[in-house]
Image (cartoon, rainbow, N blue to C red; front, top):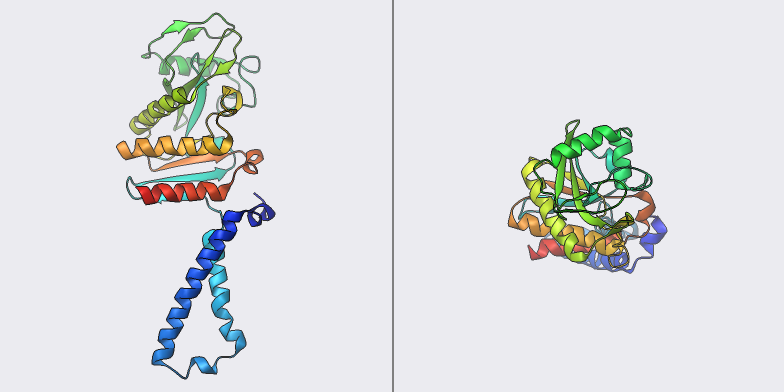
Length: 284
């Protein structure tokens, strides 16, 4: 997010004004008390010294109002939610990987090479389809197949919300199915399905992550077909809410890190996300 975009945000100016007035009031009250006990000191100050008070208030207000870092710690439960712009696969945490109910992995004809799944195959498995398929099959060995679909690629369907957890090079990859592929390999999902899938995902993270931080992309974008009913700003709130509801039932992990692609950052109102995170703290 650029400086000019932040300065053009009304939330920034509202926050700057409220924090600035609060700081100015606190500093003025402190100076009034100081003057009460040392009445001759303030009168000796010239204009430059007096201007330090509003300057300090502006600096404090700017620090409190700036949208970085976008994060919030919650005491109950003891967890943190943070937005980070960058590369999902460079995070030093466990990762969430969204998949379809058939757990297809072949690129580019079934799964887009630039999608999170496609990047998972490329970046973690170095395009080794056989190795990834073997790990997925092992993770799905105890899961029940509920049907089949006639299409290219995988044909067995698993219940939406199924999580295939892969441990690879000391990281856990939580592969969660939240879309269905039809006979043309077109993905589709609904809000209800997505919510249930997130509930099952956080249950799995709670069990398998050992309480360590987990990073997730913005769920519901890309080929899921959800972008028309769940714009990026709403998708972020949706992901945060699902995590916080699950955490209030029982702590999931120490941190949820939502990783935003650099090309998507300009579409996100970071100040609004911070306000949303703050509101969850106040209601907890």
